[in-house]
Image 1 (cartoon, rainbow, N blue to C red):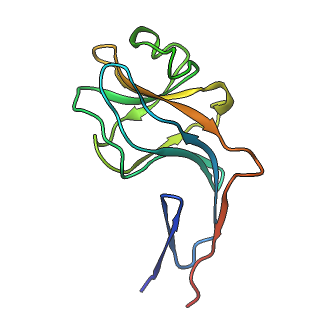
Image 2: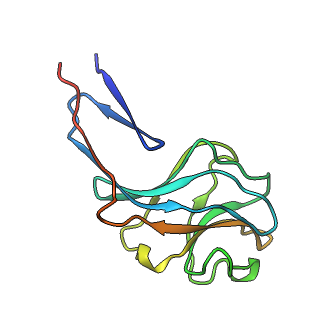
Length: 154
């Protein structure tokens, strides 16, 4: 029977299965406050490096109003300057929202230059409507939280 070890890390829940290798998580960016464009969005998120895979982690306090074709987009424009018509200009679509409320995660391609993005958007691609935007706040290397999680001993 496999045992599971659960460790809370600044809003992040890590699961390690016995026998797995060590999991290393480093926080790269945190999210600033959401700026309402056409709809109000709430909640926190962060971008982490988890064993060399970059992931957008949306925390369980996330919520946004219902809409069709809602997607998370990394944008090179700031949260204040981005508009519905410019939401996809130079942006990287991370995927369709898995749910309107609650925790979810999205893998960010290795080829993406995270330093070129300034905000995370909730965008309705079908009707070109920008719900909300939140600034990306880079975590200083000296402040980056790194967590090593070893599998439990039998």
